[in-house]
Length: 321
Image (spheres, rainbow, N blue to C red):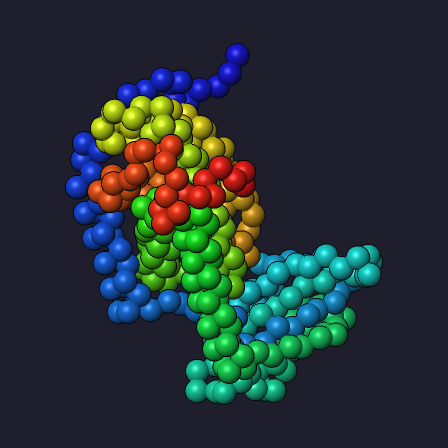
């Protein structure tokens, strides 16, 4: 007995309202870009500069108690993370991160002293073996590096899909990835959630997830284009999406179950990362069907796959990836 969220055989018309869905996606991207430029992102310590203090204590780390003590200092964005250190099995280790204060080039010695005093009020025996600061210049370099990482990943996808299929498939896949990234940034701008290197990691993971969904659909499209050479492209696309729909839904639902569990039970430290992943799975699944395939339909595609055309970018189509 197998669990089936979607019947094995479906016959949905995914392109009946494609002008509406494409228009809605384009509008959502425009709104996201507007939110980014009007509201900006709530950059975390990684991108604004700040200090990380490592604490050692013989008492168990109480993250809520640490945060309550530090909130009274009005330091802005504060992150408290319990860390497992195998070299100190009898010690309880935590990392406390807080941003540089407005108007200061870096975190001042007075601020660091105040943080240590607040934590010592909870545990007088607590020690601080390591204090690391990130200045604004380093943070600016991290922003540039993060942007380059995302752009290179999208460029690599463009090249891979072009080799694997045709340029029309490549443009459809990249359009879906840009759609997912822009909407994710828009959501973070709207809700002003902390945007740090963890979110960049989530964006790159979303790229991989969305690409996986898109390639599964496109691979079936290519098979059906060879099988049904006389059928209109829209029918072949609908057939291919319906044939892979059960797999797509099952993959998305099982992934969401794990992510929602992490969001509810994982604590404040990973909330931003997990939220980005949940949003990415939803929009990534949507874009694989309603963005990538819809663009492929409008661009058209080569139908006679028996004749090799080096300029079409399909000379590597039979390579197993």
